[in-house]
Image 1 (cartoon, rainbow, N blue to C red):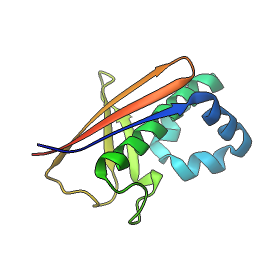
Image 2: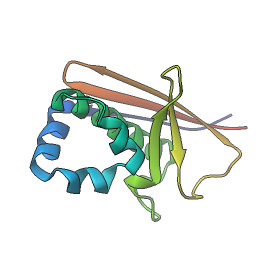
Image 3: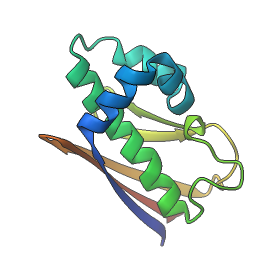
Image 4: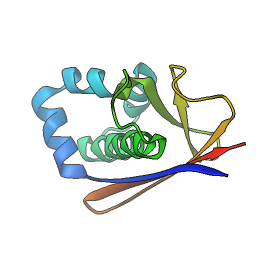
Length: 124
């Protein structure tokens, strides 16, 4: 049974501008150490911005699906986006603000200047 659905869209140049202006301060506030470390494999700032924009959208989409937004003590860094060996995106949470009986489905996409994420939370 579906518990919640969330979607978000992010303007990639906005993430690029913010990361250029605030640098590590912005990245450390929003992304986990693992997400930041993985991003270093991309040499281009534009490609890194696309990587971060998709993860930003995923975090926003997740809290929308959860129905809480960023409240009740949930912060961006509590949510980590990673890919399996085949490239399928997954979402991990670092705090117990969702029951273990839920399955989280995540889809990420980008085209030109926009990144999108779609999250479905199901009760198992």
